[in-house]
Length: 67
Image (tube, rainbow, N blue to C red; front, top):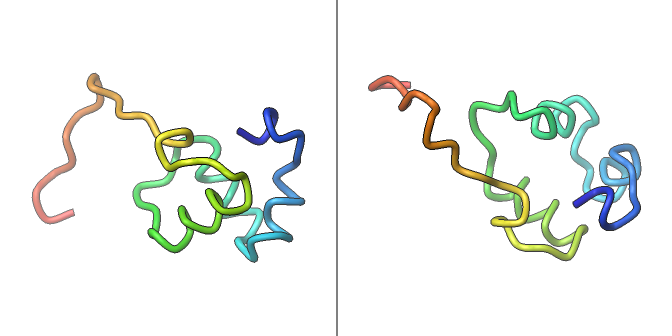
């Protein structure tokens, strides 16, 4: 979506108030969780839907109980 909207991670960080470090973790797929407020801010700025940003990986192991 960043490329489609011709924007950078830095500009998204400035527009949303989300740190570059947190956006980088989300972008690389290393995030274990994402707050709805974070997802909402990103979607608002990029004018997209959450499904445009997220994908479900059926091959990934399910999370362990209690995590």
